[in-house]
Image (cartoon, protein in one colour):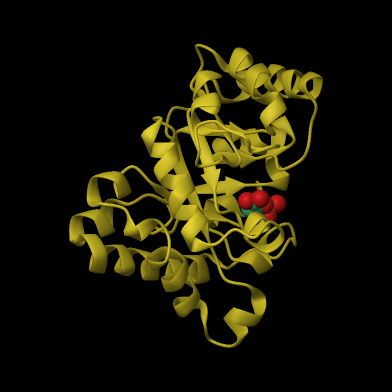
Length: 244
Ligand code: PEP
């Protein structure tokens, strides 16, 4: 269960979140848990979660290790903070910041090279779904991006299926819709890397996951976990999702 805080919270608010959140999830051992705050809050989050079962991730990284790239943050810099995860190719980055399959691939390679665990997001826009293009879009995003990794590298990638029309809109994909898309993604992985990888790849669902819909989504065997935006900002609500 991964929380994506997007561009919310200060370091002080980060500390307050973990003070409230950690006791609420101390007993639940059934899943991995991570929070991906804005870069500036990562040190606070790492300090707060040290010795707990909650991991910390970044929301992006640049693919060069260092250099004259004003405003960018590299994998080794993130890794040095103690963070373990990194979200790559979130739809907001694809829509507003020019992310493509090629840059997703570069970022994923860079994450793996420094030992960060990538969570690579894919998902169709509403007009693509309505035009019956969901499968084609997913195939393009996966095939044009991280599926170009070698098998050993791909095995370390977590995929997040996030239909863009469901992100931050309150419109969740039905459990069946989400499961259908996850099945398509597994078929693509199977076609590229074989049945064991297709069955084993971890696929999170993201898009308006809330305490009251998480159970029905997680009841789908195709769905391995959730990437949660809005509902991860409040300790009680994200704890309810973790403890579903
Ligand atoms: C996200 O940001 O990845 C996301 C799924 O957001 P929300 O849960 O708010 O729809």
